[in-house]
Amino acid sequence: VSALIQPVALLLIILAGYLFKRAGLFEDRDYRIMQTIIFNLVLPGAIVYSFATNPHDSSMLLISLFGLIVAFIPPVVVFLTSRHRPVQNRAFMMLNGSGFNVGCFCFPVVQAFLGTGAIVPAAMFDIGNCVMVAAGTNVMTQTLLHIKPGMPLTEQYQGNAPTLPYVKPKDKDAKRLARKALARNVFKGFFGSVPFDTYLVMIILTLANVKIPDIIAALVQPLSNANSFCAMLMVGMLMDLPSGKQDVLQLLKVIGWRLPFGIAFATAAWLLLPFGAEIREAAAMCCLAPIAVFSTLFTDKVLGNAKLAGFTLSITAIISLLLMTGAHFLFVALA
Image 1: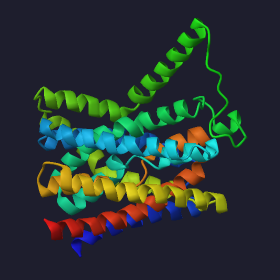
Image 2: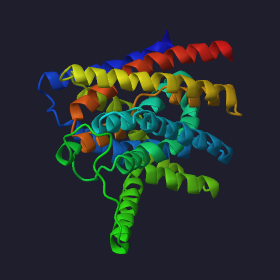
Image 3: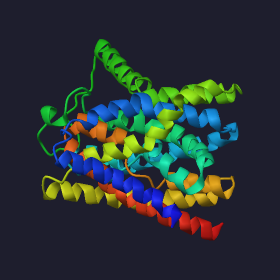
Image 4: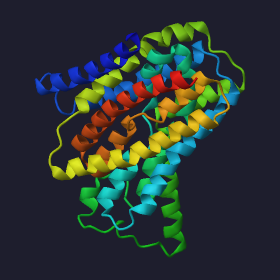
C-alpha cells in the first residue's frame, strides 16, 4: 500500500494544478512560468544533486546509449509510415509519439518505488533520451517535413500535403546559407537547453572522476526536492479538455504509437541490459514514461496548439503512472 501512496500523491498534484486553473487562480499561459523555472533551475538542480549524491559508474553510459536508441526509433518509424498524412498530423505524431519525460516524471516515480539510488540509472537513461527530446526530435521533424523554425505551421501552410513545399537551393551561396541555417538550428536546439548542458557537464565530470563537492549538493538539494511537485503541478496547469473530435483522434493515435513502443522497449531493457534487477527496472520504467515536457513546448511552437499538447501530456501521464505501478509489481515478482 505504501508503494501506491506516492503515485496517488503525484496524481493529486496534477489534479490540483488543473482545478486551480479551472477556478481562475492560474491563467491559461501561466504554465510557461513554471516551464521556465523547471527547465532552467529545478530540473538542472535535480540532475546535479543526483550526480553529487550517487556514484555514477561510466559503464552505465550503456544505458544512455539505450535511451538514445529508443528515443530515436519512433520518430523515424512515424515519418516512414505516415507518408500520405497531412503535414500537421505528421508533425504532431513525430513530436509526441516519441521521447520520454524522465527528469520531471520518472525521477519522482522511480524514487518512490526503488529509493534514491534508482535516480542514477534513470538519469543515465535521460542523458541519451535528452539528446532527442531537448532538440533532436524537433530538428528532425522540421528538417524532414521542411518546416521553417520560428513560426507556427499554421502561418506557413494550410493545405493537406505530407510535407511543406520545398525548393532545393541550386546555386552555391544558397546551399551554403541553407547549411548554415540548419547548423545554427541544431546548435541552438541542443546547447540552448540547460538540462542538456547540465548532463553534458556531469558526463565530463564522471569520465574525469571528479567528485562534486558536498556544499554543491547541499545548495541544489531544495531544487531536487521541488522537482516532482513543480513538474506535476505544471502538468495540471497544462491540462485542458480537447477542443473537438479531431483532438481526441490525435490523442488516441499518439497513445496507439506510444503504448506498443513503450512496452517493447521496457521489455528490451529488462531482458537485454547487463545490470542488476533494480537498474534494469529503473531503465524499463523510463520506457513507460509519458511524453516529454519538451514535446509540449515544441508542439506549441511548431503547431501553435498548446491546448492539445497539454491534454496529451496529462492523459499520457495518468496512463504512464498506472503502467509504471503495474510494471513495478511485475518486476518484483520476476526478480
